[in-house]
Image (cartoon, rainbow, N blue to C red; front, side, top):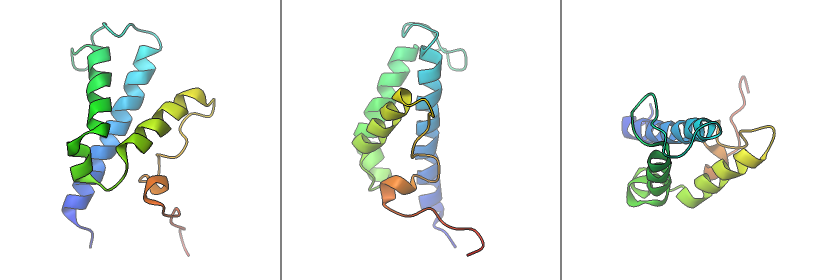
Length: 104
């Protein structure tokens, strides 16, 4: 049985990744000073807050993963035409694990 605190911490991190991606998509067609329709907050400030989260103490409390590496990979995604590179499968890349095989 998995640790419920670990599951919660993973969910918080994955939500931050999803939020970062959504903000970057929003900012492709809007100014950083524009308000986000889902929260009413300034897009640029929200992006800055997420970047601080990845680099801050709260992130380090949730995981052993290097927040700078996560942020770098998210930024790398923006430059690649195929989009999302490594962060999709429970961030296996950052934990240095191979993706699990089904049926094996």
